[in-house]
Image (cartoon, rainbow, N blue to C red; front, side):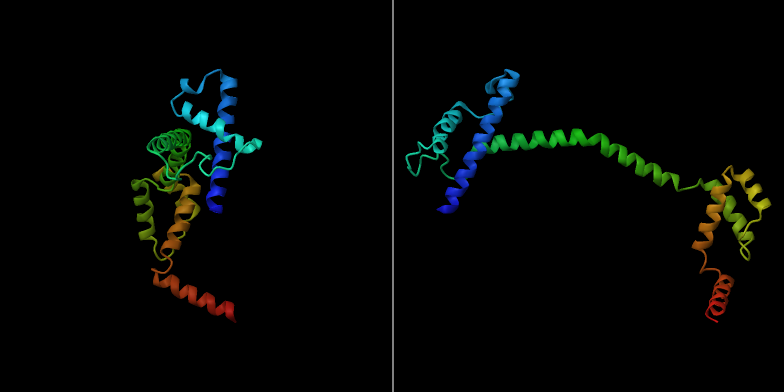
Length: 188
C-alpha cells in the first residue's frame, strides 16, 4: 500500500509537471492543446488533474479512490499515445543523427580505401620483392625507378617495403637465422 501511495504521488507529480509544461507552451505559442498533433491530455484528463491538484493544496479528503489513477496498467489510449510519442522520438533521433552516421561511415570507408594500393602497382612492387628476396632493401635508385613505374610517392614505397618485410619476416629462412644470431649477440 505504501508503494502504491508512493507511485501515485510521483505519477501525480509527473502529470502536474506535464500539465504545467503544456500550459507554458500554450502561453508561449498561443496554440491550445487541442490544436496540436493530438498527443496531449484530453479534457477529461485536464479535469482530473484539476481535481487531483487538491492533494497538493491541502484540500484532499483522504478517500482511497480520489487519486484518480485506478489500476497502474495503461489504457489503450495511453498505450497508443506512448507508442506515438516513442515513434516520434525515434524518428527525430534518426533524422538528427542520420547525417552524422553517414559522415562517419563515409570516413571509415575512405580510410579503408586509403590503406590499399592499386593492384597493378603492388604487382610491380611484389615483382621487385621476389627478384630481391635475399636482400629486400631497395637502393635509392631502385626506389626512384619504382616511383616512376608505379606513380606512387617515395613515402608510400618505403612504407610498402617496411610492411612487406614485417609480413614476411618469419617466412624467409635467411632472415630467421639473422634474427637468431642478433639475439645471441645481444645476450652476450
